[in-house]
Amino acid sequence: MEQRLTIVTLGVNDLKIASDFYENKFGWKKTKSSNEHIVFFQLNGILLSLYPRKKLADDANVSVEGSGFEGLTLAYNTRTKEDVDELIETLENKGVKIVKRPEDAVWGGYSSYVADMDDNLWEIAFNPFLSLDENGNTSEE
Image 1 (cartoon, rainbow, N blue to C red):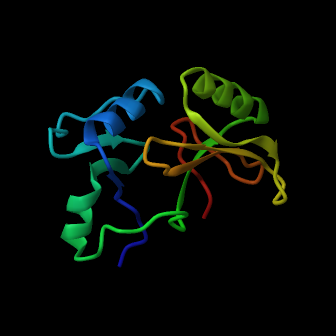
Image 2 (image 1 turned 90 degrees about the vertical axis):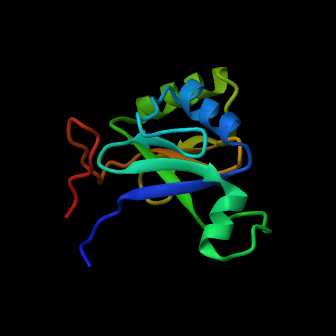
């Protein structure tokens, strides 16, 4: 198996509301292949998709029931510590739920957490040990 990640799919309670969050709070653009059943956002090298939670559970043959921490976070890394503060301020001004305010992290970086409309956690972080290229791709090996 090749070492790669192609798509991250988030099961959402309301596709229209979730799509609006990513388009208007994060400022992302849907791909042309998005439709009324599934939404895709082209990220740097992978796709983020939004799909109704019940349909996603049915597709995987698992129960849709469940709450609390899912054991998964998504991360958006910035190039500087100041970028974290600026992005959190921008997101907060757009009404995004701030779960954890920016602070120095025990691992040597600087991070904060926000939640989307379905409480999927996004870490907004500066990692001084992680290099990003001009497209925001990591260059760790």
